[in-house]
Each structure stands twice: as structure tokens, then as C-alpha cells.
Amino acid sequence: MLSSRTKHLLHCALLLTVIVLFEIFSGGVKVGDAAGHDFDPWLRYGALGCTLLYLLRFLAFLPLPQTLANLAGLTLYNAFPDRVVLHGSPLLAPFICIRIVTRGDYPQLVRANVVTDKAIGLPSHNRVRETVVPPHYRTKSGALYKARALQYCLEEGVNMLSDSDWIVHLDEETLLTENSVRGILNFVISGRHHFGQGLITYANEEVVNWVTTLADSFRVADDMGKLRLQFSIYQPGQEKMKSRISEIKDFRNQGFQKSLLPNAFNEISVKAVPAESTYK
Image 1: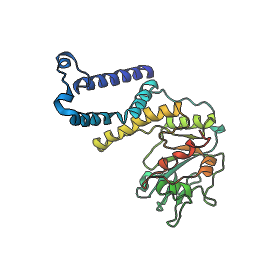
Image 2 (image 1 turned 90 degrees about the vertical axis):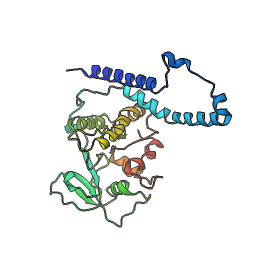
Image 3 (image 1 turned 135 degrees about the vertical axis):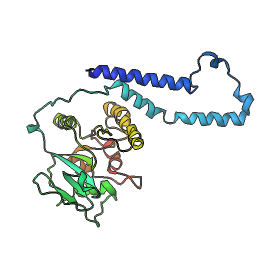
Image 4 (image 1 turned 30 degrees about the vertical axis):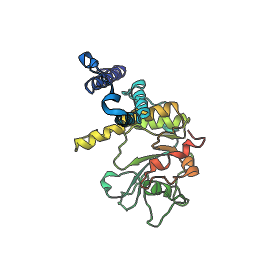
């Protein structure tokens, strides 16, 4: 069995190989006889045509900062971490609420603390609560969709958690692994930060559609690359934040704000709040 460090070194070597091969076969790096076939583009295409062509080529540099951040995050940090070890006793940790937000269209996916637009009839249990958001409810900030539902849970008369409790926000299709639970406990026990997020992976079970699964792999790379780098170096993160875990007093003080985007989810809606305050 390969060690975690060996896997990461092989991962970095493969990434470097893919980049080098792509540059060679795409013509970005010329080798051999191809290096001697240069010409003057100003003479061949003229001043106007050459200027337009160069402007089009320079457009490729627009995502360069994000690309470099992803590259740094994927290579500087171990992409194959070992099994998470608890740093304290779970009995001494604050109460953690796993809160799932859903429209209620797929009740078979949900079996925990739920915020829903439609009643889905969860079985009665002292550790399970189903909260149905009234159709007439409006937030003070005008937040919509997930942000609206999650804000409703924080309102007086609805919220049952104390200020020292923590909330983990999940989508209805997201499952917690043993490692993720240990990581959440370590994060909460450390007491160093107010907001946090974790890696979401896809295709852990049977792959139904390879096209959409491969498309989602970019989101995994984004979490492991740029987002991991930003939260390790720039705290609080300014580029992007998908808020997943927070102490409840922080959300009650800040609230879910209205996003500039008309179809924004709760991750986008809370992005600017901790970045502009003293929260970490």
C-alpha cells in the first residue's frame, strides 16, 4: 500500500507531465524543427489584424490568477491525507447540528435535521427535526432560496439552538463520512475559527452519468486547490467561500444576506459577510 506522501508525489508528477505534454502538442512550446518556422505576424496580417489576434490570445490570461492558485493548492498541500485523528473527546465538544436544506422533492434523500419548503414527513425522533418554511416568510435582507430557508431557522421562536452550538449546512444529496465527522469535531474543538468548509467529492458510489460526473470533478479540484490555498493563507477568504459550518451566534449576528446574483444559493449569499468583519 502506497503511503499518503508517495501518492501525492505521484499526483504532482502526473500533473506536471500532463502540463508539459499539453504545451508541446498544442504548440505552446516548440521543439525540434518546429522552432525554426517563425515569421513576422505584423508583416503577414498587418497592424490591425495582428493587434486583434494578440488581444484574443491575451484573453487566455484572464483566468491565470485562479489557475495558479489551483496549481499551488493541488501541489503544496497533500491531496491524499491520512485518516483523520481526533484531537479531543467528542463528549467535550459543543453540540453540532447537521442541517440539511431541501425543497422537499426528494424525501428519500433526507433523514436528519431538515429545512424544507414542503413537508416530507420524517419519522419522529428526539434527534431529528423537520422545519417547513412558510410560503409567506420573507427575510429582512431579501435573501432567497437556501439562504431564505436557513435564515428562517434562526428566527426567534423557530431556533432551538444555543449561541455556543454549531451548525453544519449540507445539501440533500450530501453524505457525511467518518473522516469528515472527525474533521468537523477537530475544527470545532480547536476554537480558532468561526466559519469553515470541507471538501465535497462526487462519484463515490455507482456512476449514473459519466459526463456530469466528470464535469463535477472541476468543483472537487476547486475545493482542493484554490479554496484550500485561500483558507490556509488568506484568512478570511476573499475570493470565494462556501460556508458549511459555523457557530450559531455568528450566523445569528450576521444573518444570510441578499446576494447580488438573482439565483444565488446560501453559499454565495453569506460570502461577503465574514470577509468584511473580524470573523475567521
